[in-house]
Length: 269
Image (cartoon, rainbow, N blue to C red; front, side, top):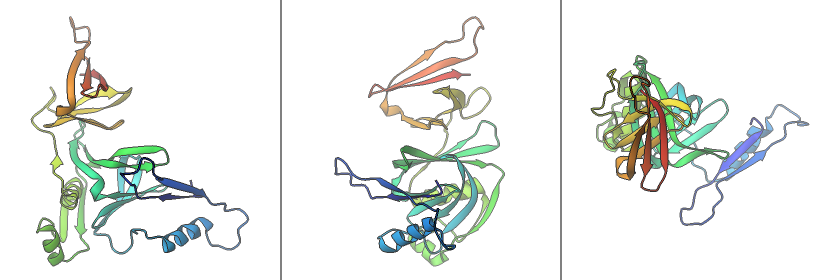
């Protein structure tokens, strides 16, 4: 909320239990002057703590980015080692070291595209964990970008994979930036096409409509809940409610993992 300050702590992977977050409610009633007590508390903590701060010039900045998970519109600032997402209510910092996978998936409507960042550890907001950061971008949206680094520094640090001036479709510019800075391969649909020539099958998971993408190394479902199931982790699959005598055009699809978890997808067409 507006009167809250949240402190997130570094995680100790070797500890059985560790403190992850503390949230403070800062009263604003009965205060004198124009100084915001919430901002004042925030600034004093930052001044005293050894915090990696998002200060100085970001390498690049993108405004009004449509984010599906966590939902909202965010200004995304890209720094050398992390990505900062600044929204109206919440801010998130995503270290590049926590980004395990990158996906670029075309929407079935032909007008949009999903850019998915797989995160481990997930980002958090209170008790809610987000193992995926999902942007929805428009295919025809373009951008012109001047990176806040010299051509010499870009060449030295990134081996000439980035240029100071970048322009083109927003989705391609942002995806290229992420691919180089994170150092991960961008996973895109392979040869699969449905009967309409699209890369995904429309279906529902946990009563929420979405899209199931058969990729080269696994299945990806977006966007709620976002799931990535690697082929090597699948024990078996099951098809149900197959069309019989033209009664039904849809079917259900179950994926059981080697750990015994069953993911149920319904109303595939």
